Image (cartoon, rainbow, N blue to C red; front, side, top):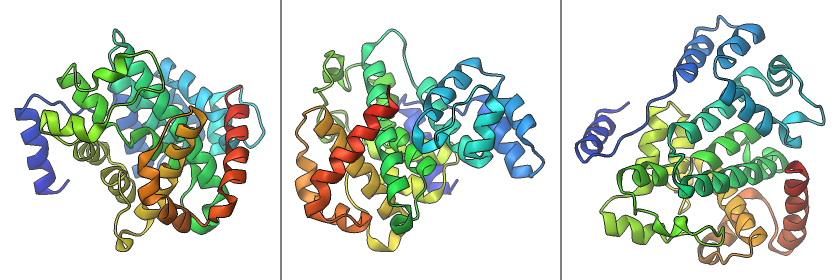
Length: 281
C-alpha cells in the first residue's frame, strides 16, 4: 500500500472509522494462491474452515453465470467448474458482507441484499459483454459487492449515517453525496481504502473509487468495470421501480463503453432481468 494510502487509513483510524481486517480464511487463501503451491483439495480445505462462508459461496455459485448449468453438491465441484482464482474472487466478495455488518440492525441486511443483487446483475452483463469489455463475471461480481462498501463502514461509525436505510422498503436509498457532506467524509474514498487494504486488483479499486462517475479513458479496464456496475445499478433500479437520476448524466457513455446500442437497451433489460429472476429461483 502506498504511503499516502496508509496515511489516509491512519486518519480514518484517528477519527474512529475502522477498516475491517481480512478474515483469516481469506488471508490463508491469498497466501496459498500467491505461493503457487495449492490444489483444489487444499483450497477447499481452507474455505471449509468457515461453514458460513461455504454456504454463501454455494448460494452465489448457483447463478447460471458461474454454474454453467451444473448443480454443485461439493465444494470441490465449485472449484473445478468456476476455477480456483475465480472462486477466490467470489470468496473475497462474500467475506466482506460478514466482516462489515451488525446483525441487530435491519439497515445492514438491506444494504447487503442490494449489493448482492447489483453484483448478480453485473456478473450477467460482464458475461455477455466480455469480448468488448474484457471484464469477467467474477470480477464484476466482486465490484458489485464492494462498490459501496464504504457505506456500511461509515454506518458502523455513525449509526445514523444512512438512517433512511432503516425504513424496510427497498425503494428507499439515501442520497449518499448528501450523507457524505453531512458527516464530512466520502464513502467512495473509504470504499477504495477497504478494497486496497483487502488486496483487490488495482482496476477494481479504481472502479470502486469512481463508481459514481466514469473515470478518465486512460484508466483502462476501470472504465469498463464502472460502466458494467452502473448498468447493473440502473437495471436494479428498473426492477425495483426506482428512479435513477444518475443514468441521465452518464447513461449514453456507459452504453458506448459496454457496446450496447441505445435502441437495444429495452430489449436487453428484459433479457437480463429474466435471467436474474431465474437465477434467484
